[in-house]
Length: 119
Image 1 (cartoon, rainbow, N blue to C red):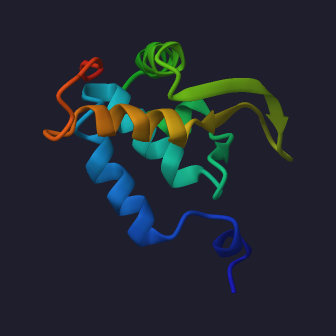
Image 2 (image 1 turned 60 degrees about the horizontal axis):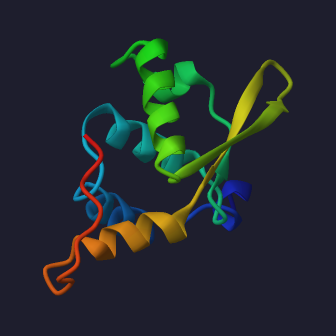
């Protein structure tokens, strides 16, 4: 058994999160959130490098801007540095409660939509 399996989010839950989140977050911010979720444990904690997050599709500067916007909106918390054997990366914690609260506010059944998608 892969040791990551006991810590990671199950694939079916991860897919649902991605589908729901796309209604709320767009552009590079969506891509960054997807990568953070992909690397996160069940508690939303991860520490991929900005190079890993960019995945060759965006500059590290674009990733930094997306991370700053996601943090400003309360979807992630950027923490201290996490050292691995080769690198030291920032740590990230995904605020799933805030994410789902904002997703639910976009529901057609919710007449008081106060949050607009992050674009």
